[in-house]
Structures are given as structure tokens and as C-alpha cells.
Image (cartoon, helix red, strand yellow):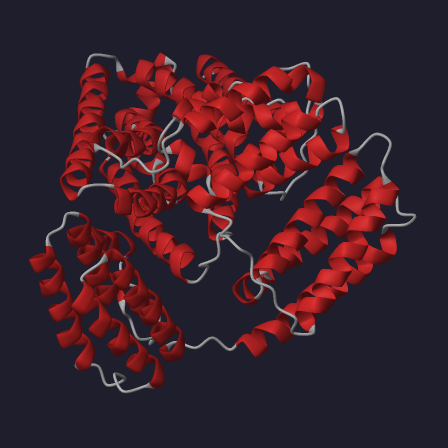
Length: 562
């Protein structure tokens, strides 16, 4: 039953193409596994019978891979065990690959065309290039790799992991003081060899996946190695921590859905620990202890499900409430905000489907992090102008003039900005929430999942009602002032989190200021890049406030003279 909800959450990949969809068959196997674990063998037989009936009705049921499915199905019907059901699942995956083939040769040619020129420029610049040039060629290679890496991960997961690690170690050596050119040249040689092997068709499969619980356990082992090497081999310790940071988006959901406090500590503290190993040793020990304390095999309950919705939805809800509260007398504004919110929900679902189907690699989580980062920055840009506009209506005279001329003021561009901000606020959190639920659902009882969703909606609804009640008791011109300050604080936090996400995924550099703490609760992270963005944001808001105040003063003077 739970898998049907997952299909509703992610819709169905066949909506976006003509490929054969086997979602319902995987649902049957999953439900059969649940029955087998509960020793309900009559239920297992029923699921397998339904599976067989539907599978035999397929036009492709006589293909070579289909015969493998039928053999595995015959065995499963005899044994009625979890092992036989898992074997059936493997056979079904082979059938899916047979029916929905990917043109890997075309992908390999495209990979070579897009990545190798960037690599050759990267290789040529490494021996003698200055830090500015090296940062540029590294970013060009990294961007080309990110856009085309899927074919490497699909065909040769070991090469994929080795190239990712070598690039992370190159970046670490490049940012060292002084720059470690010997290590950089070594990593270039390794990357060159891995790329040559892959392009020659010498594929290698990794022994385990990079994402999920297995990826987290591998990352934990790396952190333990780093802890042991602090003071003995700091270079290796830094490399292990950086490797963890690089792969963090692929398994962060395993921690975020179980321990939000630990999640925040990892995101805010690990970069600082890498920058100052001796001072960060105790914090690293705490992080390792926190990860070890997690029960990765435990299922999720209704509270876990509700907290995800509340945590991810609260910021978006605050922005929407702020806009509704300040503009409750304008029908046009309310329609624009409502349409923007609805569009954000729809495109969140569509984006989640694309990330989950078109980018099946673990790196789909990285792409989600990057997308969220850029959307957050755009949202903050729109928010700056909305804040200044709200602030300009906070004086009594400005509010009176606004009420008189509201239809004119909210025509055209202003309405589009309001709807756009509502859309960006929802879209930024929506796809991530859906992907988190997709990961949680297999480990959640259907009653807990449904109850948790209902609880989350109720809590957010109560919060919205409470905010609406309060705003009705406050004069409208004061609401403009309060809501502009609220949006200002949210913009500061969203910008910090967005830049930090881009730093974690390697899109931007991360220069840590060890003397400063990171405060994830307010979106403050101790990197020059993040702080610089927030300083620019503050200056932009202050400049717009000053301009608005000056404009109001001039308007008052003109009225007085008249």
C-alpha cells in the first residue's frame, strides 16, 4: 500500500516519456516482502498471483529478460521467502533495462566531447597556473563533469567514485597554504588515468552504493580515519573530511529525518573542523558519536513524518502569510500569491520526478541541493524589493496613500513579483520535501505516514490561523513594518543556507574563518563566501530603505509646498 502513495508522490515516470512503466510490479514485490516479514504467506501468494496475471498480459512478456522474470516468479511461488522475492526484483530490474534501453554509446561520445576539453585545459594549467586561473579551470571541469557524469556512474561506479575523490583532493591541495602542487599533479594524473580507462571501456563496479545508509556508513568510516590521523597525518585527515563533505548530499536525508540537531552540526561544523583540525577534534568526536548512535534500520513514525513537513514548510508558509497579511485588501494580490503557491507545488512534484527518474544516480541529491541553492538566491533577490516596498508603506501617510491608489500600485509588475516570490518560496522547499518522503516511505508504516502528514498539515494550519488572528488585531500600516522585518530575517537565513549548499556541493569555493562560529538556526555560516553574500544583502536592503525614505521625504515636502 505504501508504494502506491510513493507513486502518487512522484507521479509516474511514464508521464514524461513512452518507456514501459513497471511501477505496479515493484509495488507487488514490495508488498509481498512486507507480508513475508510478517509470516503472512497467504498474502504473499495473493501478491504473486496478481503479479503473474498482470505480467503475462504484457506484450513484452516473451522476451529473454521476461523469461528470467517468469523463472524467478516460479521459484518465489514455491519458496514464499524474502530471498526469492528479492531475486524476483533483480530479474524485474533486468527486464526493465531490456525494455527501456539507454543509448550509452551516444552518452559516452557526448561525455568525451564535453568533459575532455575541460580536462585538458585543467591539466595544462596545473603545473604553473596561479590560484585565480586554477580556480577557473577547476570550476569549468567540475561543471562539465557534473552535467555529464551519469554515464560514468551507470557503467562504472568505481571510476565514478575515484574521479569524485581525486577532484575533491585536488581542490583541497589547491586551497592549502602554500598550494600543494605535487599533490595537485598527482590527482591530475589519477583523474587522467581513470578517464582513459573508462573511455577505453574498462568498466569497474564499486562494491557498494554511495548513497543512503550504506553511503553514510562509508562516510562514517572516513571520519573515523580522519580522527585517528589528526596530529599524525593532517593531510589525510583533511582529505577524508572533504570526501565526506563532497558526498554529504547523497545521504544527508538519513540524518536529517532522524536527528535535525546532528544534521545542523554536521553542516555547520565540518568545514570549520577541516580548516582547523586540532581545534575541531572534540567536535569531530561528537559528530562521530552522534552518527553511531543513530539506528539506521529503525522505521519512521508519525512524528518523524510530521516534523519533515513542518520543518520544510514553515519558512515558505511564513513568507506566504506575510504577503497575505500585508495585502489582504487586494484581490489581485491574493490571486497572484495563490497562483504562485499552487504553481510552486506543481513544479515541486515535477522536479522531484525528474530528479528521481532522469537522474537515478546518487548525485540526483546533489543536483537537488544545487537547484535549491540557486532558487534560494533568486528568491532572496526578489525578496529584497518586496521588503523595501512593504517598508515604504509602514508610515501612516504612506499607508493612507496606498489604500487610495491600491489598484494602480498593484497593477502589472508588482503583482507578478508577489506571485513570483510565493512560487519561489514553495518551490525551494517542495521538491526536497517530496524526495525526503520518497526515501522515508519504505521504512514507514502506512498508518504512521498518513497520520504524520495529517499532523503536519494540522500544525501548519494552526500556525497560519494564529498568525492570521494576530494580524487582524494590528493596524495595517504596522503589519507592513512587522512583515517587512520578518521577510528581511528570512531572506538573510535563506541566502546563507543557499550559499552554504552551493559550497557543500563544490559549485562555489568555501573559505572558512575558524575564529567565527556557524549558527545554522539563523543561516549564518563562517565562510567568507557566505558572509560576503549576506553583507551585500544587508547593504542592498539598507540602500533600498534609504531610497524609499528619501522618496517619501521629497513627497512630503512637495505636498507641504503645495
